[in-house]
Image 1: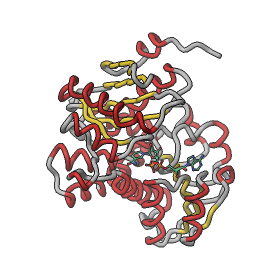
Image 2: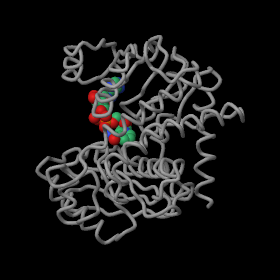
Image 3: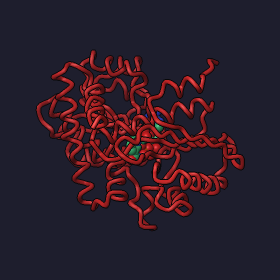
Image 4: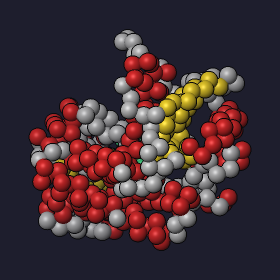
Length: 351
Ligand code: NAI
């Protein structure tokens, strides 16, 4: 097994600081990566899962925190990027969850205004309620029963939907998704709303998932299922990764039979070089941090900036216009959309 040097991971990272705490009671490592406070206090989800090594958890936190900076900066949104990862041991039990989250909440109190969080893989709105009970104002997306905004997934799905329209306009000359063939990979919280919107709009949608219960549920609702491994090579107009990160790599990109990739999953590219691979294959790839920003923007806008729900919805719909600019710039400058989007983000970060 190759050794990953933590000092090298940190030295290579462009972010500002990392807070690490070992939680003796549960055996979990809490890592909070503050990537950039340039545009304002930072916001980022809390991911709770078991990693093989501490360095894997750290690397995930660093990468995801940078992604959050880009996500906010590309829209000129007044918040910085951060991410928390809680690396729990494999023996972690549900009875340990609330006490761990309370101790985590007290740590957030110590950090003050610099970082607020929300749900991510392995955490939910109910977990945010627990954190808020000891650290008021530090957790977004609390449940509606305690006055929070609830899940960010519907807003994320709306942003992805608008981004798909923009990509379709560039690729096919029309932003209408009526009649477009679309593969949705993962019908979880975001995928579910997305597939419903697409189908209502007249798109021809097929889906894949690895959770047999969800597969049965969506089949019973009339959606066509394809096996997870067949999703890559299924001929379609749009491939929508809404499950896991790192799914676009040398192998999967060579199998794709689509014109466009737009989806909700974070960090879809396995390696930076994969953006170029997609471009070489003539596949229009809209960077995830543009397509999936809807949830973060809507919830932070409502809970931290005082937007109404209607205003938040309007802002999320605006993802379409930003997506169009990114893709147009990419074509004009003959660069990958990833680079075009980073250039816009960097411009906002400079001012
Ligand atoms: P989720 O956990 O509710 O759904 C993920 C779905 O993907 C599950 O149904 C799971 O069974 C399925 N899945 C897992 N591995 C798969 C595979 N190999 N092939 C096909 N399906 C697979 O997560 P959620 O909230 O829907 O998020 C989806 C993605 O979007 C995640 O990567 C998340 O980080 C990202 N995201 C979510 C946001 C949100 O507002 N919920 C915001 C921004 C990004």
